[in-house]
Image 1: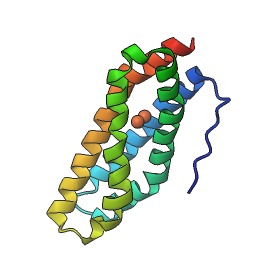
Image 2: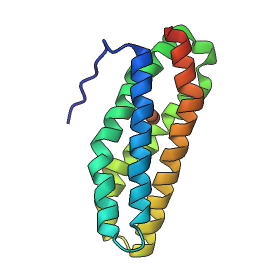
Image 3: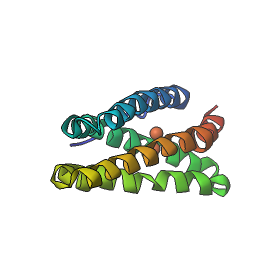
Length: 140
Ligand SMILES: [Fe+2]
Ligand SMILES: [Fe+2]
């Protein structure tokens, strides 16, 4: 799958859209967790249905927000780069763990999903507190 990036979308609009996507992802992640007790197949399916949207979202953040931060504020980039590196775990989970989740025992599957959802929700918050305000300041 390829991810076409729209480099013409203004950064402020893009950040507004990314925050909206965070809220959508969070709703779906919470829905997945709420199904863990009684319907693990649907819980996994929710994550599978989100997976390409989450990867596209991350690719866009790296292509556009990391770029503007490195170009215009390299000296204050450290924390934002650290937050962006959390994409490694997210993408690794989606590409390698998620397709194998159904093979796990119920309890392990439960723990893996809880861990992923918690990490991703924390990641969204960190972006909204660190990366987005910096990129927005540099773009406006
Ligand atoms: Fe991200
Ligand atoms: Fe994000």
